[in-house]
Amino acid sequence: MESNYLVVQTLLGYEYKDIFQYLSKVGLNLMLAALILVIGFWLAKRISRLIGKVLRKSSTDEGLVTFLINLSSITTKILVVLTAMSQLGIAMTSFVTILGAAGIAVGMAFSGTLSNFAGGILILVFKPFRVGDSITALTYAGNVTEIQIFNTYILTQDGKTVILPNGPLINNTIVNVSKLEKRRIDIVLPIKYGEDAQQVLLLVSDTIKQNKAILKEPEPAYFFTDFEANAGKLTVTCWVKNKDYNEVHRNLSNAFFPWLKPTEA
Image (tube, rainbow, N blue to C red; front, top):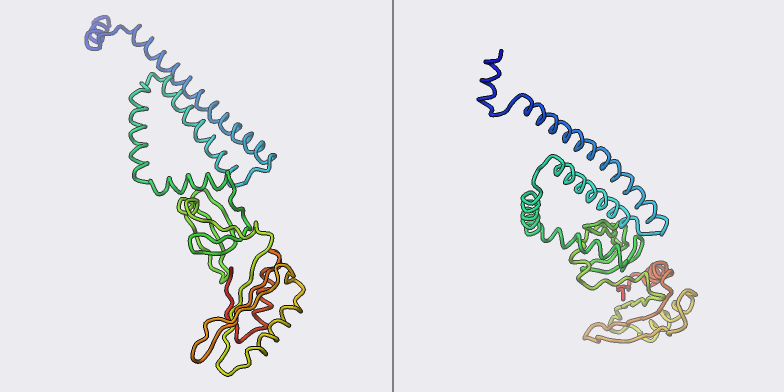
């Protein structure tokens, strides 16, 4: 028995006592690391819930709330994992270096995605528009139905859902017509050659006057333009309150059909 002990000691270079102490230390560190993970992940969940509760009480945008909850959860869990690894004696310097290099590579590979991510943060923080607003951006016009961290969704007047990337969106002109107190409606009526232009003007002006939603100030305006060999155009401009825009636009379109070629301002 003693000879076997000497053989093991010779091969390993350690005594049984040293091996037992080492295993005890490793086992203790494993238990502490596991305890750190369990408590840390529990704290991450509690912290995320607390952040969400505080932000929702302050009427913060729900999209921003969701993002900050996820960010706090991921950040806390990463710190917990790093602490547990440190408890196991794993050198953090080389690990952080590798992690940093990987982060740079991922950042270069997904530069467009990161741009959209940053754009989403700016939109959620500075709120150039909100869900339900009517906007014109990136050559599209419609109502905002959803704001996510990477993309914004709008519903156009013809029922199409358009997904706009937040990076280009925040870096280009955004017209939020929902923030306007009043809006202008432009209507273009073709006048055929030989048609009584003054009679057309009288009919159009009477229709405009009968619509109580059309504002008196600024006054409606009428212009004859683009006279050609066979026809000309009568351009009608009137102003309405923002909330009345769609209804008035629709009513005028019906009233002036089939002449009408409406355009938005």
